[in-house]
Length: 369
Image (cartoon, rainbow, N blue to C red; front, side, top):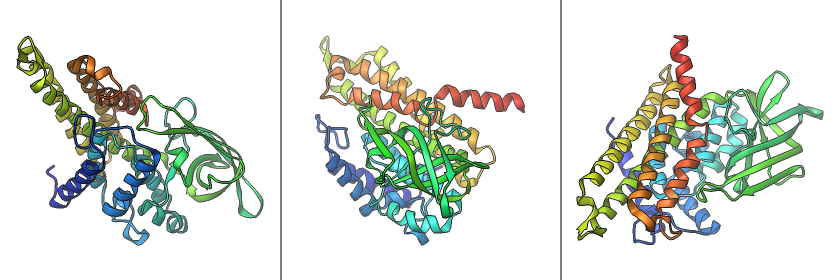
């Protein structure tokens, strides 16, 4: 599906801002560099306040743009290409989708305007140490307290942007099933432990809740729809990152000389880069098809999301590995971005469920049919 004029303008705006905000060691616009937490917060402020990316999925009545997942995926492709360390996926996609799906107008009116303008960040405290992102398996539990209050406890792992969160969105098992709870991170009983991750551009944390006060949001939580849409957004990010990894590899092959010739002139390397191109284009197509299916509310959207996540994860890992190989020794240095793409590829492959888990889900659906 071709991009609309509005989507192209959105892509250009995000790309321009990222290019102005950072430049890599080799002068590559939008490449990943080591940045302070303050610089990353400033980048997010400009993306959210200047372009409005944080509010794309949020209806206009709550201060957002009322856009679709297709626009989110446009942004995600560019953020992935730049390896930007923003709370887009965790707050503006996953957290926002869970709040909207709750149907709790009062909670949405209270929480979404701050998420839309980027002044607030939501972190979803969902998974156990196993990290399966299973809609039927949550890390926390909740019990009713006095006068309509709720007490929430548990230990959630792999929490996106947990250390930066101003709002915790906690799926927790309560009487009757899994509910959604808003928990303030600055209260007694909440401990947030940020982690030094392999992929330094993807901040994760462990959040421990010990008798923390929570506010119930809506009735029983539906975690699967929000997870599936977030998987499509992540697939778009992976496709965008893979495309940038390929572009930088091709550019390097044109200027790196070996045996008196640019290495890009060797047929064996041309074949490998052609294979990378096929992976990138097919990953991009599958991610965009998932976004289009979400717009059409296709009945098999969950399986399409699983296919996009599984394929884009494996495609990005393969392209990033080839980027390392074709750059040679320079790719292993801390100053070069190739190892960052490799780390992002393998880190994001496990996020929102491993590729093997999603492939197994697709296989089960096919067998049951």
